[in-house]
Amino acid sequence: MDRLTVEGLHFSYGSKSVLNGVDFTINRGEIVTVLGANGSGKSTLIRCMLGFHFPQKGEIKFDGKNIRSFTQKEMSLRVAYVPQTHKTVFPYSVLDVVLMGRIPHKNFFFRYSKSDIKIAFDVMDRLSISHLAERPYTEVSGGERQLTIIARALAQEADTLILDEPASGLDYGNQIRLLEEIVKLTDSGYTFIKSTHSPEHALWIADRVLMIKDGKIFADGRAVDVITGNNLQHLYNVTIDVAALNGSVKVCVPSRFLNRKL
Image: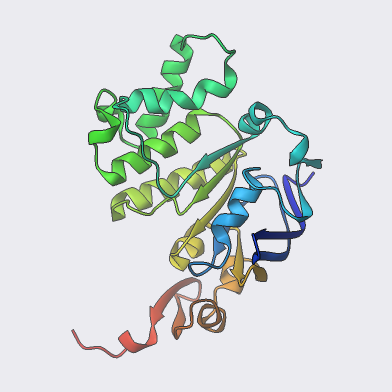
């Protein structure tokens, strides 16, 4: 069965139309990357898929069931979310923030169990942030906060993760570690839907790419087929050369830099 289906999706903020007839299906175990310029509708699409916004037209289904029929807890057991940014004024420890991912598994009155704490440390180990466990979340770096929120999503143990530009704010090493972890989890049956401003990340790990412009999907397919110079120029209004290395791996280079001597 398809994991996620979006059918004829329309969404507006007042009189401003943002999504205009979006259709696609995502299968279990896929890594799907959404590419689009600022203002293209990526973040609004993500918020609709999470049930934060309800569309004016069309519907979104998880496992064949309209998301409107799920309670918040039922959605949280199925889908975990990593936002672009996250702020809190309370000095929770990093461990406390990661443990919040366990809340959907709890009743109203609860205490975290030894199992919850083990799960939290396991995901922090994966992302190499266990040493931050007792540090106040408000005092770690922006990249460390982003890794903490990703760890919280993993601790939630939902098998679908929706990530809105998850690598933003991460240094190069942590970007690579995050992408490696996404691939490992997908091999274990997880499904990932993520937006990014880096076509290279999609080429490295994505099974599929959705390109969105003016609230519509204009390209949907394998990353190696969809990420072309013509499509990137249409998407971002800049000339990009997409070159193949060794006949397989592709790289994206702005054409103005190709002949620059260093």
